[in-house]
Amino acid sequence: MIEAILSMGGMALVAGLGLGYAAKKFHVEGDPMVDKIEAALPATNCGNCGYPGCRPYAEALANGEAEINLCTPGGKDLMEDLAAMLGVEPAAMEDSGPTVAFIRETDCIGCTACIKACPVDAIVGANKQSHTVITAECTSCEKCIEPCPVDCIDMIPVKETLYDWQWNKPAGPAAPTVH
Image (cartoon, rainbow, N blue to C red; front, top):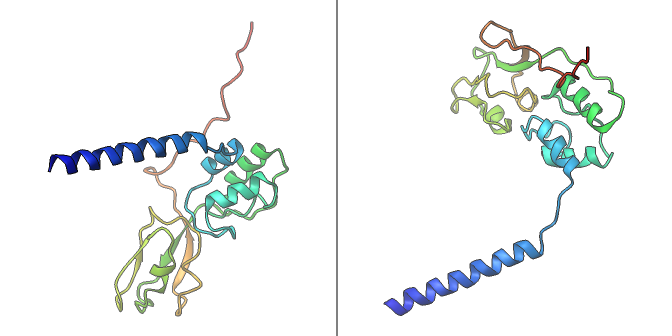
């Protein structure tokens, strides 16, 4: 029994040391610009930009292969931030402010097509029951609109209340003034 435990422990130790050595030996540095762009993106991985997630979109932006105005959940503010990061002119983008999906529950037939299409699981409901959207989770990617067979999903503007209103972020540290 002791021999088996010692032999398994020894093999695990050798395998761990081998994996640690391989991780150090074959480590590849990533592009810091891609990491910076990915950190700015909303991380919804909705695919609305035409890429399978935020990381591939960030890589395409860093390589100059994609337009900066493709992220609809990020909106116009994100597009302007990306333009400043990449040193390009902001592109034209229609932005009416934050929106959220709204299901007209009286028209919903409970087919679950929207639930399957939602990349962030913001829609709840059951088969043959009306569905609803968890507004705090909705990223406004609009992926749920097309598969709905009865067209009962609308994108509505998010109402700003005292509870969710926020100050605009400052532009950065102010330069010290010398008098």
